[in-house]
Image 1: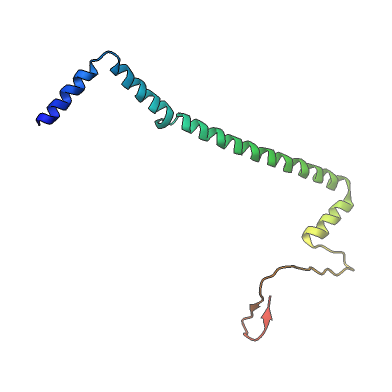
Image 2: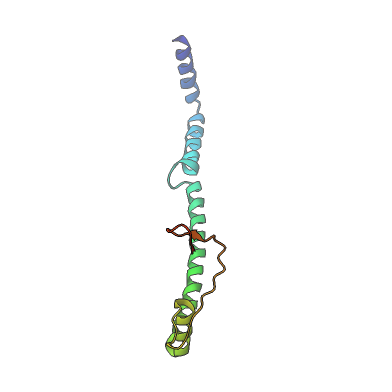
Length: 120
């Protein structure tokens, strides 16, 4: 108990030195502003980084949007472009055509439920 009493007396004596109070308050304030609070400098830097990644995404989507608008205008003006996209992306065909879809997949064929035939 005497040790705690001595520590307490020393802290109280040091606390009453004129500039110690201000120094402790300044250190606590800097720690709070810099690291602890939700509006700290670390949170501010994290938010700036997040904003920059979101800005990059916005630019990417704006470029994609501009390309899509150009494609839509072309589709509205040119019926041949619509036919080309229908053939390329949706495998549509005219009545007198046959379509062969070639794949470059490297996966192995799976066993059929019958057991003796190989099917993809």
